[in-house]
Amino acid sequence: MLTFVGLGLYDLGDISVKGLECVRNADAVFLEAYTSRLMGTDVPAMEAFFGKEVRVLGREDVEQDPREILDAAATGRVAFLTGGDPMVSTTHADLRMRAAAAGIETSIIHASSISSAVCGLSGLQNYRFGKSCSVPFPAKGWFPTAPVETVAANLALNLHSLVYLDIQKDRYMRVSEAIAILEEMAEKAGIEPPALYVGIARAGSAQPVVRAGTGARLKETDFGPPLHILVVPAELHPVEREYLEAFAGL
Ligand SMILES: C[S@@+](CC[C@H](N)C(=O)[O-])C[C@H]1O[C@@H](n2cnc3c(N)ncnc32)[C@H](O)[C@@H]1O
Image 1 (cartoon, rainbow, N blue to C red):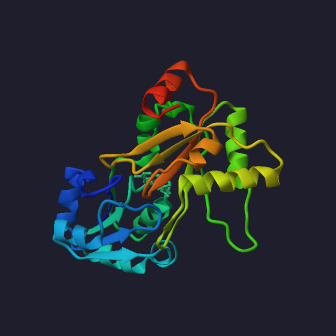
Image 2 (cartoon, rainbow, N blue to C red):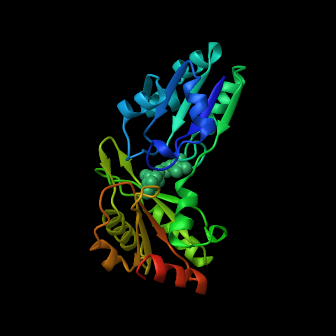
């Protein structure tokens, strides 16, 4: 049995009661920490809280050669942990299908996700979001402009854009870096950079930071420690504007 368990957004208090029961009863517990990360806790604290050893997996262990997970699930109960909801902005549908093809029973225990938390924190209505995109750290000789083109296509349809920010081993993209990269991408693609942004830090913590404003203003704003995420809003509905004025300093 392979159960995908969402950990929620920030710390150990975000897992559901069902999720906690599943982990505590599991024969093996795996953690995928490369698509998202709970910044309010760490692996030793998780192991103490769950009373289980937690095996941390890299992208290759999940997406290329998931034999270790599938072998464990073929003979016992496996809990596969992911930050946020396990099936939102991850590739884990593939692992579930591989397990099913191998005759392994699967299930999902959902959790709070950054994709819904941004709506609550920003007041931007969830049905007005278009396609999401991710801003990667630029690498030598590699500077894609696809993210800003996705944002521009959404704006043309008057839709908001959720912009995920890159996570690498111990490096987390900040709102200011993401805006600077989007502006550079816009220049390279020959399109207007977005006029308005909403930056969000540490959703799910007791003190999330939410600020709306121009790129110039948000690049100067201190959002504090990671994780950060960005939204490029479309034309604001009056209620969305009022909410951003009340809760995001617009
Ligand atoms: C690829 S998405 C994975 C989403 C996850 N499966 C979920 O449902 O929340 C991860 C990105 O979302 C953003 N993110 C995730 N959790 C966050 C949080 N608590 N506060 C701010 N941004 C967050 C970061 O930009 C991070 O790189």
